[in-house]
Image 1 (spheres, rainbow, N blue to C red):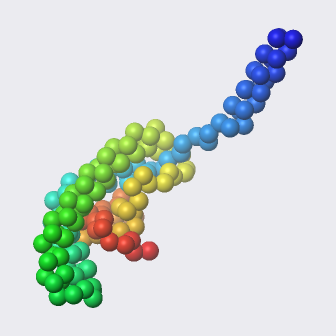
Image 2 (image 1 turned 180 degrees about the horizontal axis):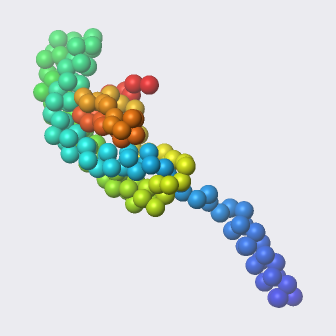
Image 3 (image 1 turned 60 degrees about the vertical axis):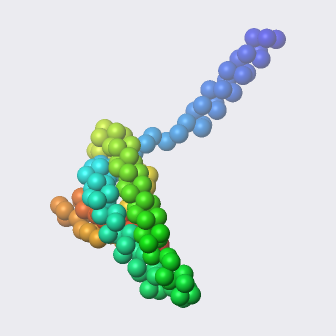
Length: 151
């Protein structure tokens, strides 16, 4: 009886493992290019954080319908806060570039792509947004991480 139960549980475990095995992780040269781009350009995001923060706060200040007291008091703390958020997001961009780099190397020749770990880089506006090698290598830095993405 114990032998029968053991075989049944073993068979069930094998069936569960075979049917619930995750699909293999796939990447393409685009993932590797995105990873290298994030690693290379995250320091530029960090350097441009005060400029992007000031531009963002000014744009929000200009578009707001707040009272005069809020419009006077908001800019300085807003710039300080948004600069910190921008700097932190640039560090996260560099770290995600490193995290994507490891699996992207051996899987670069598979014709598939993985989703970006930090998608504001893909969606949000930036001071510099272009690409090299015919759209294969994204050059994007000075990203506005605090505004809504432009779809």
